[in-house]
Image 1: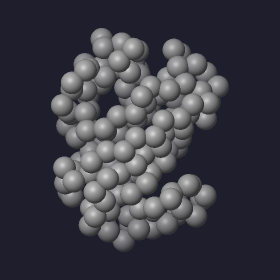
Image 2: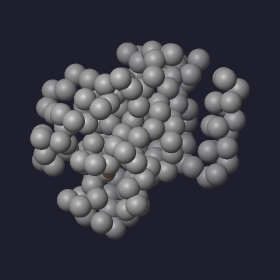
Image 3: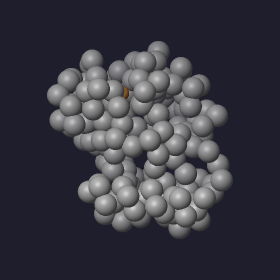
Length: 149
Ligand code: CU1
């Protein structure tokens, strides 16, 4: 299992993905409502994780906005449901939602956002998901996130 993770990471790297270090992640999002990766992981030794979300499309935030939201897999649907009434101004995230472990801002085509978050509260073996909380996007824009030993 651990070996498989290494192979995935190595192949992503070989594909030219810009990964500056093991605790630095980058993911793209598109006008086709897709993330460029289905899964992300960082070593458990990371105290701080940096994630850069890039929107490679051209469509505006109002119609094809994307963000990157991290939560426990079990919390994801609830975070998504509660984010919709929060509206675009709040990035479709309920203010103060403690289930949200990290989130970028909502961005449109041509934009990017980079965040850093505390990884020391994340646990090896816990199932995390990342997703886009723009209404209706979670169906296509969701992936797994894990801490690896
Ligand atoms: Cu999205």
